[in-house]
Length: 606
Image (cartoon, rainbow, N blue to C red; front, side):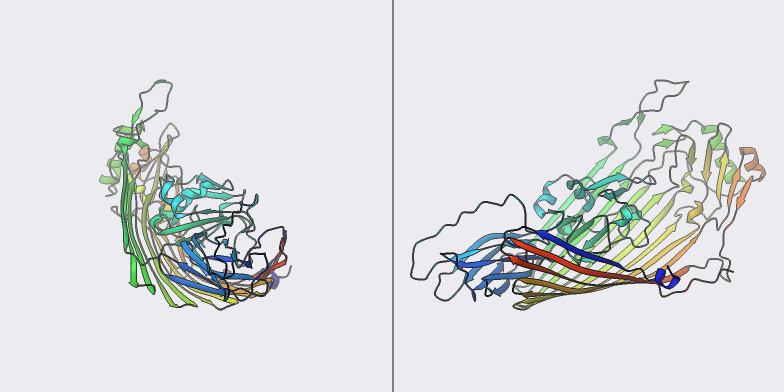
């Protein structure tokens, strides 16, 4: 393959599936749902020209469609949830109403009508059994409603706790810091995608195990109290779904209604709810007593408020959430808690040398409980501009901090003094605007998003100092100073997204044509060992200043701390069709083209 072709990688997905369904699926959407069905008379004949109106009872939002020549109507882009009241009306026939209708995210809810002549006064009750196969959607997907979110237990109070409800989503701790890493259908977690209100919400640079912005700080990408419904997809037959070959997590947020409502919550636990730690047996002490669990705290609180700004016209919903968590590392030199690291005299000697000879305070010998904190804010507004136009504007803000040390430290062979712990701070702000427009036989979703993320490592409470390793005689070692990958470590990400989807309802065909484009801009400062990295083979060598190994890193340019800056563009176009060839036969097919583009040239490196 030539260099030019290798720069532009195009993936064409051709989806052709034969589904035997009854009734057929309608116009499925990513952030909303669909109501559809057929209007018939009492003898089963189709009724064209019937007006079908669906009213979202909590907000008064109305959707309207007219049945076609085949009696079929489609109400696309309706709000997720409900309840809805759906009414079918036609001159010469009695109106028919269905109540307590709920719509799931991305699903087509079928509501069918049999209208009686206006001169007939008898009441007709229709009883139908559910089909053995769920035919309202194609592909493997699970929907998690508000009721399930509120009823299922969750420790982290995060979206990924609910991913466990799908057998295709497997959560396992990341080896570095025990974050949840998600594998879907056996694929690596980097191949997954997450969307909130249809907007891509991924860790594009790829540093976080959970794959979301701010994931390195151990925080959730959005407050759970702001989520209305979650959809887990593995193999969706929808040309608008792209950018992943593992699994997709699609969440929609809550909105206000015509009634003011609010919630307040607090969750907490501490070391009293944990118990003790089984100690590690040694030859000298084969049956040690259990160790005391160190200072542990996990608290989360917040509140939500929603309601109308103008009845039936404008609504708001807002949430404020805070979390404070500190988990002990499991080892201490002093032995007050955790597993005892049996080198108190040697470690104290290293601490004294660092203080008196090098003027550096390493911190104490008690067990460390690194904090993980976050503050979240969410605001969403909805405007019913007209019967055919709805505008959504929302913003999500997350500010997370987390204290860590090198992977696998501390352990039975490595002990990190408090000054070796670094702090990651990650700030994310993500505004989204979406305009939904519907006509009698067509709809349009236009969405613009922007995500600004700033990630930086610091060493709060301690002076800048080289990274130091001091070896002890029994193959153990002690770490102190500023962790070597945190000397100069910053990452800025700016991501913009423009999506426009047009769906046309043409008789037996539901045609979708759209484009999805993402624009990434990165600034990455990463220089290991900028302040130096020393390894001493003994305490005596550390005291004498005789290092076995010394490393220093810098940028070989005019700026010793020069950051890498580059941009990426991802363009996507697609078209698909759902053709209802017969009442029990639907063909779904489409084509999608994704083309990444790298406009920058790498810096010369002769």
